[in-house]
Length: 351
Image (cartoon, rainbow, N blue to C red; front, side, top):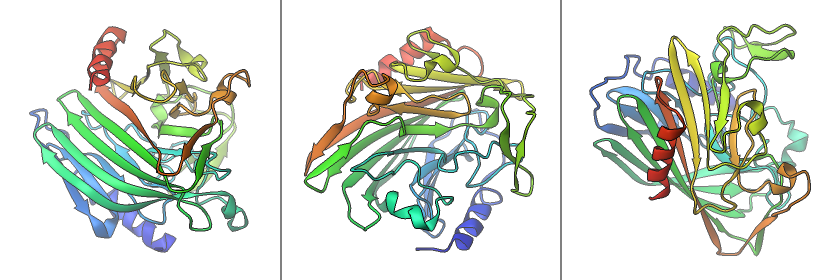
């Protein structure tokens, strides 16, 4: 286990001077994957500019993709708490990048774990640990990363092994991340008791949040967190649209095969479209999509999303597996309407 101070040094250099700063080359180049074991990350670059990184230090509570940039170079993920940027929201420190975990696995909370949890309460929380890279490929227009991870209880036991296959695609105006996740039970029974706290999620940049009148905490240029009573909503203009035509904050707890979150920054419209695959458990998924920047697909939390009218309480027996397929499409510029998204989703659903 590495010290927190050592991690902060690594992250400082990784997410500042260590990454290329030039804009994305619109003449599409091959996607390049490069591993940096000493920095606990794998970089994914397009045309010499960073697309995203898979980060996996044991000082993090889970591996994640962070940061994530659109084709025009705009960062769509919140930096806090890994690499805070001035003016960002500083709530929910367990919301980091693009990740997958869950809030009730045999009574252990893998979702809410963060550096802010007091040591006396850590026995209630689990971690997800990187084990190895199984495959890494850099191809024209496509990159592949396959990793193995363990879900680890506070007592060190492993209820689940996880294999994740990331497929990265790029064009001049979009970036795509496919995540194929296989969970395999290692103990007699693994229970995913219904809770809204999950599961496949991204925490987005400030401009993709909704304007708000409520007090909120923010990070300043020195990393200090301050609570502000009256918010500055300048440039904050996010909005949701679901495949079922539901808009705004009302999308929370609804089912949909895809969900779009979009906003405008630096004169550019950026759309993040999160897609559920027809083969997934409980398709079309429920959406734990919040107006403050949490954007999550949750196939497990049926009781919370139906106000107790329905339950799922999914279980795996030892050696049983379940696979999930999700796609994150990040589109730069106008022209990402429902008709176009349906075409993207249709191609994904046919895979």
